[in-house]
Image 1 (spheres, rainbow, N blue to C red):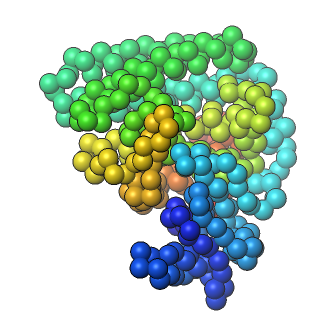
Image 2 (image 1 turned 30 degrees about the horizontal axis):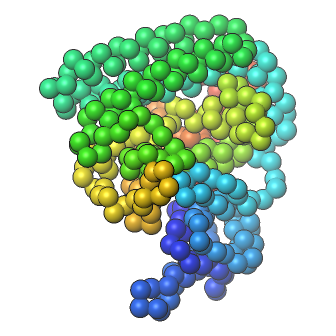
Image 3 (image 1 turned 135 degrees about the vertical axis):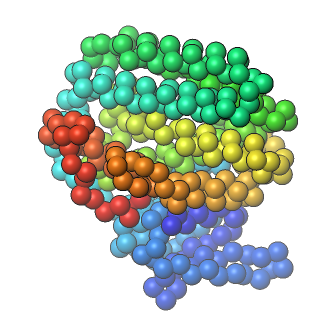
Length: 346
């Protein structure tokens, strides 16, 4: 389970060798919720929450990372053990791959998967909204054309190639979110992606969902022995977790689907977000609503993956390990066996 503290004043400490979450109730009393350490995979700390040094020690003993989140869900730091997830040779091979055609292959695979997921999402919308069939079919076709342009890129990921890839990806993203807004109930329609701050409630939800996914991806990459800072397309920016931004691309659709389902299912109201300077920010109730649905989708919803039933959190970990093994061995695809890993790590 993911232990998510987002209530102002919530305090995490240790009692009877277990995590214990204390929260102040409206009547001034304090509630206490004990959680066995071996059941916790990650601890998410929102603004205005606190924890004890004993809680940190217990987390380290059980290989539980503690992630500190900004109000928009972006991870600003984490406490975890100092061990590498695997051999440093993986990171050496990763750096080498960034300089040859392997880096471009990974980027193309990830971006093509992202655009195909976007097109699939729009196709699914088209099935249930025949009145908008022509509009949605046009968006699917245009996203598909951009995907073909990305797939046709050759060479290494130079600055010129990277600019082209990001340009095609950005155009597809604008088409995609224009479509998402178009089919939403009118009160929730929005004028494109926005963050820091979100200009509307839908983007406030989406930003928080992406932020939590960034934190999951970073941990996944480290568990696989990969360097989160050494990317292939998002490259060389100071203190920038470039590989996180590369690797996350095919999985953004997970956040999109959860958030869209909440809005289209009329689960969201204006009381789930607060008005801040220049935009909106998810409040406690909004975070609870999102994270309950998000964790269910990532951890309990089972789908087929390479011939087996897996949850999405496990798929994320397996895919990161697959990249690491490809870098180490040079084998790809079906030549690689499924990694022998502890699927309870994330």
